[in-house]
Amino acid sequence: MTRQSASNLTDGPIHGWFSLSYCNYLVLHRTLMQSMPIEWQERMVACLEELHAAYGHIEQPERFKVEAATEHQVSDLTEQQMTRLGITEDWYRGETPPDGLSPEDLTQWEAEHEDPDGPVYHRDGEEIDGGERVLLPAVDPIPHYRHAYIEPRLSPVEEPR
Image (tube, rainbow, N blue to C red):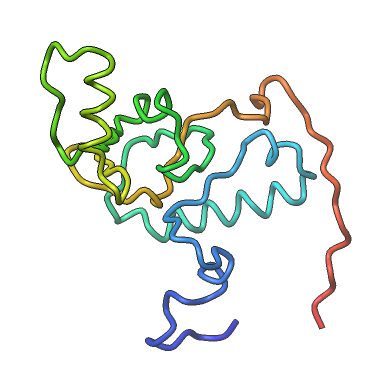
């Protein structure tokens, strides 16, 4: 094993595996891991135990909440999806129409006040960009570990040179 220099302590193989993403966590399905061959499971458990022992001195959260999701641009969300995520869309630069306008007058007011640059989006009181990517909760396509074994399609492991 090669010793890491101070300049590359965090840019090794794990950093490369995450590629260009900004992910801070790796989530692994228990169902898939339990479906792997016993030898693989033994190696995985040994790595997890080694990781746990190496950082047992670091305070860590008691639990995590993980849910399946799909990724979307804010500007592509439907009104219902935005409501679900607590995102508001403002086409009128913070102005609201006067009460009591007829449908025709409301249409005219909207046409006169609509921002030509498009809507401004807000979430949790902060303005967000319409191109920002957000996650919508979704159904997990992988079944719970108590209900499934999924046959892995294993490719031969390349021998070290």
